[in-house]
Image: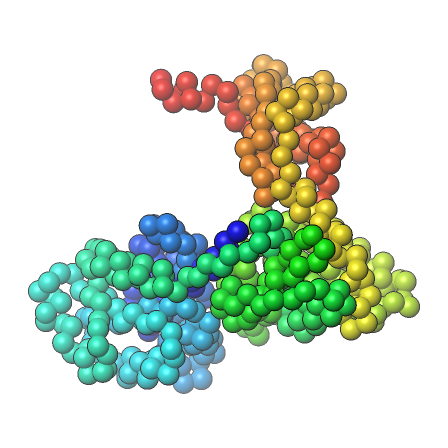
Length: 449
């Protein structure tokens, strides 16, 4: 069973060279704010991109500049420098109209020290004539190849993306895993004990361990064979806290987490018992559900509160209050230091994975829907009683169901939630996210008209 890594591509350059415009061009969106004011892209914007079947994560950074002590300038520079450190491929944008600046020279010198794939892109070149007039001045940077581009008018864009596509294919790796391998990614803030937890799992269970290189960029994932089951443990970079500035900043490490979410079945989010659940923890939990992954919440360092029943109850209450949207997720306590609770983890992983991949016959689903409607009649919408005709499963990982109705717009969220709960109870899906889509039965006929 193949598992594939995906590249992180970072847009780097001085303020106002067109990074956000290129971001929008590649992602086919307007998500990055485009504004002539330098420094407007203060924090990273990132987006999954599929280009000719190549999946990568594109990140737009703030501009690099000599900030001379300016706090926001320092922050923007730190963001961009983190991109150089963490990304797999870097698109370094230069301004074809302004020419080479001291900051461009400084960044070029920094980029020479990395072994990453670098594309030196000269933006704001609108055609062959401008390319001939403006490109020559950049060769003083000592770079072999420049990519002329107009991010706004698309000149040179196809050539750039073809070159990027070749690098993506060379950079992405595919690793064969035993059939049925359960892929588990561990997430947590620095010092939450994530690496210690993985080491404790490996040591305590005395599993047959083999290393699978290439499945992450900055660590080695571990393939575990235990009994008749195989597990791929995916280590992730720690999710850092917010910066000291008042802005709510997403640190670059979140991209590593998002990349790990792309290839895992189940996310194990570690929470520090000494601190309780934090805002950053809830963000990561939210990301797992945006990706529709199975989820286990694991409170580590339980040994620190093992004799304090009041604090234990507080921690559990705080988690329930902070993350009510994942009430289905199993909540476990453990200690990476002492090994407490480790043996309970894998049976729970097994039950979550079984539900995560479950399939159900259509006849049983329709009986379940009929019973639910009979037990609680749908509301009236526009003087008509809502009707639900039939249902079927349209996917798994997580389980996905579609219900056909005479008016999807008339289904109040409270009734939709009722149906979700009935499906959960009736199908035994109490530990995983469940996706229910309500569609109009006559939608296709309406479109034809």
